[in-house]
Structures are given as structure tokens and as C-alpha cells.
Image (cartoon, rainbow over all chains, first blue to last red; front, side, top):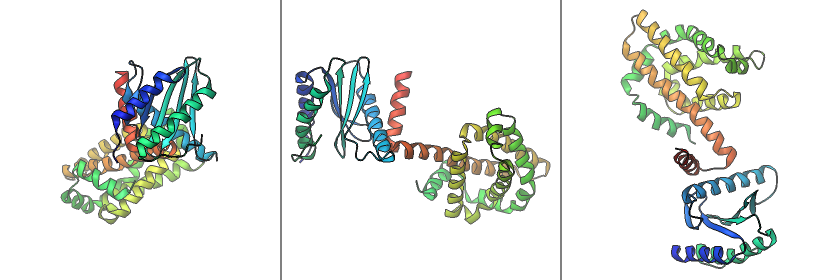
Amino acid sequence: MGINVNKLEMTLQQFVANASNVQGAAIVSPDGLTLASSLPGAMDEERVAAMSAAMLSLGERIGRELNRGEIARILVEGEQGYCILTSCTEEAVFLILADHNAKLGVINLEIKNVMGELRKQLLGVAQPVSL
Amino acid sequence: MEPLSFMEAIVRRVQLNEQDKQLLKQEAEWGKTIAPQMADVFYDYLGRDKEMNAILNAKEGRIHRLRETFIQWFYEMFTGIDNWGKAYADCRWKIGLVHVRSGIGPQHVVPAMAVVVTAVGQKLRSDGKPEALSDALSKICMIDLAFIEQAYSEALLKETGWSQALFQRLIAKGAAASV
């Protein structure tokens, strides 16, 4: 079964619209290509995709080198908010951008909730989510 | 990266042909005789750079070992080891890795190599060698430089876990954004 990009985009748009303090989201490939996105207008989607994939890849490398096991998530915390990268499937990375008022516990729960649906759409089957 | 297939791609790009190879082999003994002189030119140039001088003399005996390696390397540019086949590619790949480990980057080697190419050109004219030999040597130098540059790229990809495609996309997008 092929990936329905429109449905994927819609899922991301709904996620951004409904999740607390989330400003944007994207699904990118490990090579840094955008699969779907709902990002703030000023952001270059292609650059965000490349940087996200690079960050996750580097994180995985660090995880292996420092014996941290499989990397579930990478979090970048800045004055203006958070950037959270989560490994979605072997071929997809899930990125979310949240503002500085976001509560990490809530965001993690929101990610967990949407991840099952994203994996289902990307793989064609429902996957158990353990975050 | 597979050294032989990488070299085959660069050989096509620099258009190293059979005539070049024959000429180089034909003049291999001449190359061997001028190799120590060219090593002097190469390391004299690098030694004038403060940063490079520190690297070259970081360990006792390093400069001597490097000079000996240069002489062998220079001679092999003429012989092609196995007619510029797998053994040549593997050897050049290892040299590239040594440069990475030593911290001698393409930005150091490229100008130094250009100085050597100029010196070889002057020497071959004074020794009455054909001008085509200079062109053939320049092509081989380009191939060997490509190995050093590639060794740096591969080291970066290995350390970051990035694919070649991701690396290219990342720098292309970054460069486009900074214009």
C-alpha cells in the first residue's frame, strides 16, 4: 500500500492545530528529504528536513559510541522553545517544534498519541508505540 | 567507499589515457632520480607554513618518514604500481587516511602539490623531456589529491553517521540560505 501524502499532511496539520504549544511538525527521511510537513511559513522546509535528519543521525552515532542503546528521541531546548526529533520508522524521522511554554510531559504524550497513526500511514500497519 | 571504483571515476574525469600511462612508465626511472629533489620542494614549501610545520614536526622522525613516503609516492605516480589498478587505488586511499589522521588537509596539500607540479615542469624542460609528461603527471596528481579530499569526506560521514546524500543536501541548503 502506498503512502498517502495528503493524509499524512492532514495528520500533521491536525496535530499542530490541536497539540498544546506545538508550532510545527514534519516527517523527513534519513537522507533529509521532506515526506510531509506543517511548519511555520518562514521556515525553509527542505533545510529543516536536512538539519533534522543530520541531527538524528549524529545523535544515533553518539548513542552507539557512548553505549546509550537505540536513540528514541533528541531534544534541543532554546530560549524560544523546543525542537524534538523522534525516530518514527527506519525510513522516517518525526520533528516537532514547540514554544517555550510547552510542558515536556504533555508534549511527549502528544507525540506518543500521534506516532501510532503516523507509523500506520507510513508502514501500512499499526505499530506498537513504546516511548 | 571502494577505492578502485572511486579511482576509475576520477580517471575518467581527468581523462587519463593509455598514452599518458605509457609515457609515465617510460619515464619512471627519471622520476625516481628527481623524487628526492621534489620531496625537498614539497616539504620546504609546507615547512614555511606555521601550522603545517607544527604538524610535520609534532613527532620525532615524522618529517623524515614523510619524506621517504613522498619519494616512494612520487615514483609510484610514474609506475602506476599495477597499471593504476586496485593496488594503486588501495595505496592512495591509505595515503588519504594517513593525511586525515595527521591533520594534513587538502587546503595544505593542494598548494604544495601545485608547487611540485611547477617544479617538475621546470625540471622536465631542463632535462629535455616531452611536455606531454607534464600533463600526464598533473592528471595523476589530481587523482591522488582527489583521494585525500575523499578521505576527509569519508571520515566526516563515518563520524557523523550521515549519508553522502544527506551531507550534500545539508551543505547545499545551508549554502543557499546564506547567500
